[in-house]
Image 1: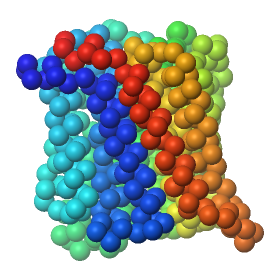
Image 2 (image 1 turned 45 degrees about the vertical axis):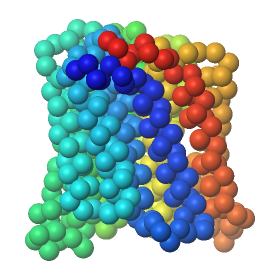
Image 3 (image 1 turned 90 degrees about the horizontal axis):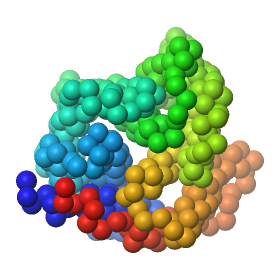
Image 4 (image 1 turned 180 degrees about the vertical axis):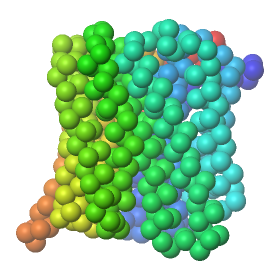
Length: 398
């Protein structure tokens, strides 16, 4: 596979983040001023699909394969990287102009098949288990399982539509199923596993292993939180609440038990862990009927939750691991980028969460949408500075 030597994979990951940022800026611009030549929903679908494939999956897969191969990527991993880029940009273009049509569905299906292939490559043999600690192994292994089962969501959409369920709660729940197991299942757990691979030295005791298992497997009932928007039967609320409660309790106990390791965490990692705690608390609060109904009726809260997870947790952990694994040249520029990024995210998320709270008292932030647009613009120079610090050539010709 000689042609793949031309690809600098870490650099492509950062380029993808920049492209994703540009589409985020475009969405904010369209909310403010409109753009008749483009369909907002099409651009939104393109943005979200590219975020999953081109940025999150691509970067996480790159880091996991780097652990397994030591940077000497086999042809199997290279094929996954290259065809992930093809599927990601294929979805970006096709969704932008057509929405859900045969072309975009083909590229989406290709991406799903690539996730299966990548999971197979990681699970093949016992290399991962032999090169990482037990905490990392459990988190990454279960993250990839959740990645694969997330595809059941989109695969049920066609049959549901044919059976006449497209405008029902079943159809929406299938979409949320995919989103939940992609974000809370694969991305979140994999990012934590990557952090543990470079920062956790404490050996798992039987007690720690029990709480880690509870934290991981409570991800399954947490899915029911995303069905509460339709006011389901009481047992669904109870199941969602129990899942969220166990998820929070096990998380807090794990944080306490691993507090010695936390001292060596980077600034980015510590910020991500604080954001993770807030995310898990938010999940439990949504299980309270009054708060849950209010949250699901406020679009900014839902967007805030998604960006708390992606921008507040996963992105900082990915950047941290790019630094830890030598993908980026370190120095003052990276330090400035890290602080600039966290400050921008804190302000952006604060606006998303505070406005719905203020609206309860009929208070509205002046030029609210314009402020969000300006903050989105700040992520572009951050991406460009990261790109300038990406090491050239080291990873492209193995």
